[in-house]
Length: 93
Image (cartoon, rainbow, N blue to C red; front, top):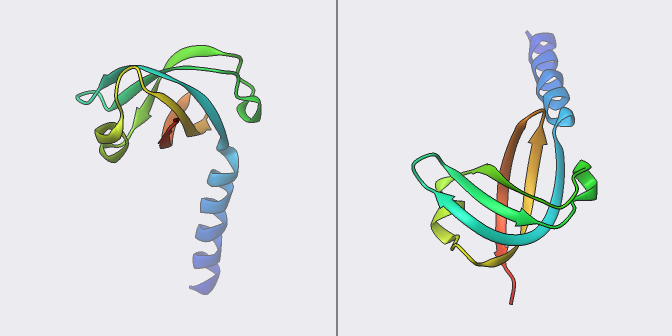
């Protein structure tokens, strides 16, 4: 039984290792609370290999509730394949 538990932990770790994470800066251009997305016009994010662009990201309700269109932000993103999610947003002064 312990071996199975260890394999499960390893599987979870492998899945997490496949996700890339990075931080970026940009401006919120749209918020869709129904779809659970935030669109950000952002600067390049070298950690995930992205040039500057505008794109929609998945975001949890706690992220969306603090976001405002037109707000300048720094943010954290998690990328796994084509699945992208903003995991934190911080307003820039």
